[in-house]
Length: 145
Image (cartoon, rainbow, N blue to C red; front, side, top):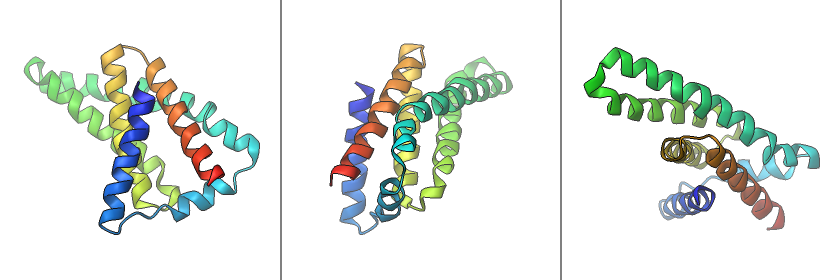
């Protein structure tokens, strides 16, 4: 469910950016088209696993717990939202090397979506699967077009 939501979210963001002339996916297409096959496979297998363990497994929980303790019990919900914002921002910055504003915006939005999947399910598994589905679909679309 979150994998399909991620693809739909990415398409919506891309459409909105294209309407205002800010869709700059050429650097992303170029980078992905030059990936060796094994690296492309790692992009939808190992990358989702390692990135979700780091960003949603370690950072989201650590930042949320730290902010929750600092803010007190009343503000625990806001601590979680702040943790989602911060970890999604870090996740987007992790994708800075693509050289695309659209990539940063999509990565930030997907980071928040993956945080939501962890919150809703209590597990990293849906986020890992959604991330893998998104990466696979993105690579497949770019390679096939």
